[in-house]
Image (cartoon, rainbow, N blue to C red; front, side, top):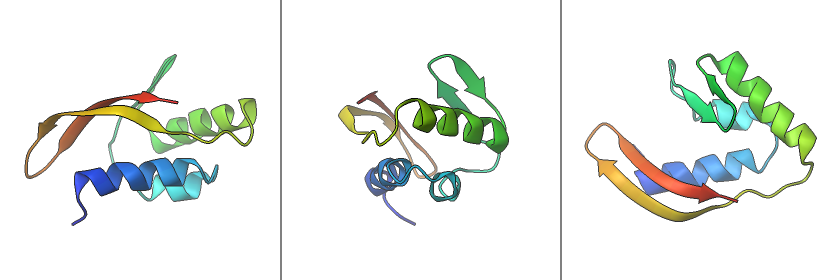
Amino acid sequence: MISYEKALDDYISATNTHDFNNVERLLADGGIYWFSDKTCVTKEEIKDCFENAWDTIRDEIYRATDVQWVSVDGHSAVCLYTYR
């Protein structure tokens, strides 16, 4: 199992490929994703939101800054961060 910090790094790296296949492999089945204007509950909804963002701002490089791990246990980790 990878560390939660590495999981976040891998997620940001996958996002920066602008290829949802790379992001999808990191998503848990049944996961929920909150975008600024929509809550997505299926992988197809999540894919649509990612692809819309990538189409809107082409070649954008995403970063997570000010990462604060608010809950970590043996099964999950939750963080807050500024997405730039």
